[in-house]
Length: 383
Image (cartoon, one colour):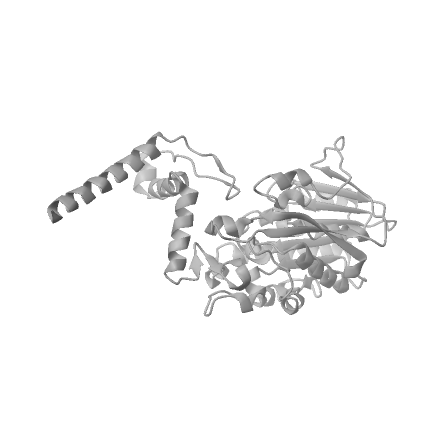
């Protein structure tokens, strides 16, 4: 009887193994994962040289992982199994207090081969632009990750690195007064809804607190919180960290926009020099019907975004940015006649020539801290 059960188990195992292998072989490759908001690995190119140097093997392993049949469901099963075993982390995501899914950031990130290069690129660029535009006109703001602010929500003994390690390293490399440190203010407000539970970005409220610190650093008066009316855009947002963990019981986030109530600020928005297509809103609500709702803020990541306002002060602000700036910029537009945003991932021109040609008067470099360390496009700052 036991021998029959053993044979049956082996047969079932082999059927599942070969069945899944056959199904994966016959399955058409998925190009884009809407759940993870990224392009999946395609079948790697084979060659003798790539095989023997190990590149083909690494790429094929990534390909199999990305294209495995029912991948999202298997990730969910893995996450639930690890939680059942008492683990508080899965796929580099901490299961933190109050329903937060917080992306893990290790100290090893500071050993990235891009870290010193990016600090050098940034310091040279900021020094040159400060000399051209003047002191007080140029700032650097690196947004801390949720794990560096919401420390009381993390599991005990969660590893990581403090944002001050980056700021302490970068500050002496930059002109005096250009580095804006938002960490203390965000830490004081950590009991408020300043980071999404399921996404790595700060919320619009978190962006507001950063805007306030930035304005004070410029010697200007920020608008108060009661100068805005918070309006919900969505109650169903599941962000990037949710997609990494694929935790089926995650509570969706609420996304807000903060509308000025004391002044009638009007905007005209164009993207990528398409002057014939203009928008009268900073929010693209058509994205709210998609899985990735974050591009509701200023149409996501575009090479060039130009926002003209009815503000009378004839100043032009350029924000060199990653996606942390998308919910920050709607606060900045209330103080400038024009705000432009450049995303170096998609912009291939000369920044120095662009700044001079556009008559830019003020400059802000705004990135997520961990994203700044790993970014491979910052060499474009020196073009």
